[in-house]
Image (cartoon, rainbow, N blue to C red; front, side, top):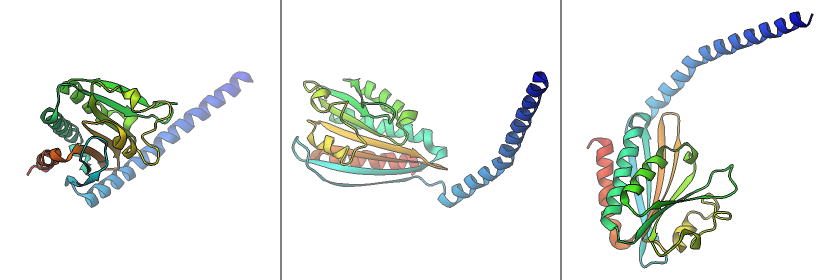
Length: 225
């Protein structure tokens, strides 16, 4: 009897598995149609815009540049490559000899924020930034990138156990109080047919024209202009 009962359960399990596979097969064309309609409605254009405003940071006159991007899936890899190149070019142009880069983010399941010492080289920043743009843990999260003098330790700026980039008023509060050379915060979310990315950049007022020039070049490269 036990063997017969076990065989029955196995057969039932097989039937359920087959039924599930058939259901998925039936739904797959529907999902494809939904994506096709969503792609048709959105179009294949790359959308990139920005606005800026005065920002009360601690080190002189600064601006906050708020960048919005909406890029179709087919251009996702190009976005990561071109945006990394844009950040690197900016870092190279404004770099001081004692600049050091840091990354701060928080994973919901962890009790503290992650503070990563990226290093002092632009190459290290480029490698980590490109990795972050594709990092699964950062999907839908805020990543804060800080460029500060070597003499300032990140522990003087934030406590990983209490600081949360997703909290109310953040990351603006951190960007306003930290002794920055410059900084940016990124947040990305993958939709049905496109990736949306927002980037807040805090720069000295004198460096705003350079940033806007690089953003214009980024838009031209992404749109093929």
